[in-house]
Image (cartoon, rainbow over the protein chains, first blue to last red):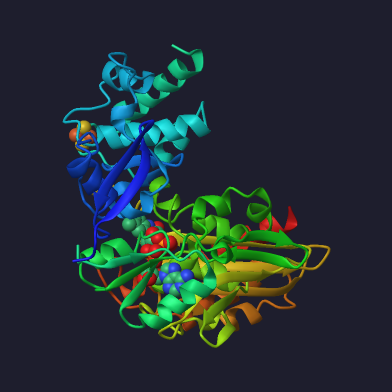
Length: 160
Length: 289
Ligand SMILES: Cc1cc2nc3c(=O)[nH]c(=O)nc-3n(C[C@H](O)[C@H](O)[C@H](O)COP(=O)(O)OP(=O)(O)OC[C@H]3O[C@@H](n4cnc5c(N)ncnc54)[C@H](O)[C@@H]3O)c2cc1C
Ligand code: FES
Ligand code: FES
């Protein structure tokens, strides 16, 4: 067995130091070592986007990142979005617009939406659909997700 | 996933030494969007995974009057995020914007796409159309190989054990030229090409005659096909339907597709003609703009 490595990363604003094997993915370590089970595992091969987290400002599939690669990086997961009991506007919009049913895709979708709105605060419907092409949802049919994103965009812009 | 050791060389010399040392037992890791699943599924069983993302030479992204240089580990989003590259090397940025979805583009490199050497690798037709050259490092120093000669079959290329791809170099774009890449898939995004075409054209200053062209065909052979005869047939021809039709017919004659779950041989041949025409028309439209 390869020796375990010590990895230090900023996770949701907090410096975390953890031990992992080189073969462990970031999604595995987030869920099993750091107990951040909000990040979901769907396909485990890069297709579904359920494991999406933000790494140094970019959305990534955490099932396709080795945890050792995260050393020195800044990771944001769904657990870091709400402030205490106050949900992030994107989370509120998903709730209010029924942008989820079973919810397995939701943490990944919301992290993708976060980077979308950070880089493009007022996206068109087409831009939303293309940007979210790597986040699969078996339940909603996507229309309600798109409406939730449009609502989140206006909420974020008006600062509410 | 199989157990392996992880190395993260900080310099090219260190990386070359590591690949030499672990020849055969090592796999290079750029964005990992191909490799990690390949290791998980057992297609590759490396004892060492060598992460090349920290090597400065593999992160170069530079354009000048000499041309364009892209380090082998530069991810797609950085390439299409550069307005000058979008303008000058449009086919390449067309490719980078459709490799996977947003999350994949945050990590996936063009170097990794090329080294994976899939017949449907979406950057490869564009690299050939734009006449890119590979800079390869090994224990004997550096050598260069045109991208058109890099892949040798599905998943196979000219890299010898102990070598790695350092960067891709592109000649400067002539005046009145442009390029385009397009693939056919049954949905709008996130799928593997049934057929893909990349092309580049140089027009005369009136925009009436095609001075030269390059055309490459993806997913219609064991590797991406450099359709030299189709491109050469365009040289000196007027910009019109007839010239483009002829080039498309030659492209079809060069394609050697198979029938698989993505499409039949006949369907792929038909698509080769349709896409060659559309891609040439778009490249010409861009060259005139
Ligand atoms: C969901 C999903 C969607 C995808 N969609 C597309 C698509 O639409 N079009 C497409 O073409 N591909 C697609 N891919 C495949 C993949 O994302 C691309 O091929 C990508 O460009 C690979 O780059 P990478 O940096 O991630 O390579 P890696 O996975 O890091 O490496 C790929 C291979 O090349 C080798 N390698 C990497 N760098 C070097 C180097 N410098 N020298 C020598 N060898 C090297 C590695 O050892 C490995 O075998 C998709 C993958 C997934 C998971
Ligand atoms: S679990 Fe990572 S993309 Fe599906
Ligand atoms: S809500 Fe069930 S998969 Fe999206």
